[in-house]
Length: 346
Image (cartoon, rainbow, N blue to C red; front, side, top):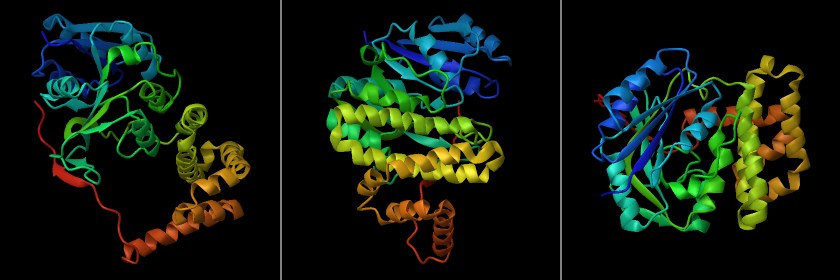
C-alpha cells in the first residue's frame, strides 16, 4: 500500500472556483488521499459545497470554523492530518491529475523530505511558465540543507510558497503558520527548510496558481507590509543559523523595502502621515552600511540605495528613466516568461 497523502485546503469566499479545485483533487490518479477541507467561516455557499464533497467521497473531511484567515485555517486542518505526506492547496488553484502520484513517487525514489513541483501562473485566458532557470523536461535537482536555504533566501528557484510542495508530515506537524498576517509563508518556510536534509525540485509544471484580480496580492493594503516583517523575522533566524546568507537576506529586504515604499507613494491616502514610509526610511538609514555591503556587486541596487538616501523620489525617477530606456531598447530586456494557452480543466 502506498503512503497516505493528506491534502489540506483552506476554503473562503471561493464559490466561483472551488469545484474546479476539488475536482482536480478527488480525481487524482493517486487515490490514497485524505482530503481535509476547512471552511473558514465563508459567507457564501462554500460550506454547503464542501459538505457535498464529503457526502459523495469518503476520503473528504469537511470542517467548519469561524473566520480566522488562511494561516488559522491551515493550522486547524493540520490537527486532522494522519497522512505520511502533506500537501497544501489553495482553493482557487488546481492540480494536474497525476500531480500527487508523481510527487510521491519522486519522494520515494530520491528519499526526499520535500518535493517541489513547478507551476503555472494561471490567468483567465492564458498560462505563464517561468522557464528562466529550468526546462520543463529537465532532470530533477537535489538540494541539501545549505543549498536549499540559500535558494529560499534568493527566492527564485525555491519560492516561499507553502503550496505546490509535498512535505513529509513529521517535518511540519509542529510548525504552525503565523496567524493574522499576510504572506504567512515567509514567516514559516525557513523553519521548515531548516529541518530538511534532502529537497527535490522537479520541473514539470503540475500546479496551477490562479491569478485573481480580486486576490489579496492584487490589491495593495497596509497589511501587505507584513512581508517586510516576515523577512526581518527570517533575517534574525539567519543571523543565528546561516551567517553566510546575511548579505543575501539584506539584499532581499532592501529590494522589498524599495518596492513597498514606491507602492506607498502611489497609495499615499492609505499611509496617513507617511508613518510607514518613515519606518522604511529609518530602517534603510540605520542599516545603510550593511545594506551597502550586501549590494556592492549589484550596481542597479547600489544606485537605488544611494539615490533613496539622498531623496526617495530620486530612486523613483531612476526607475522611471530605466523603464523609458528599456522601451526604446537601450537596455536589454529581461527574459519573458513562456506564455501558453490555458487548457480547459476537467
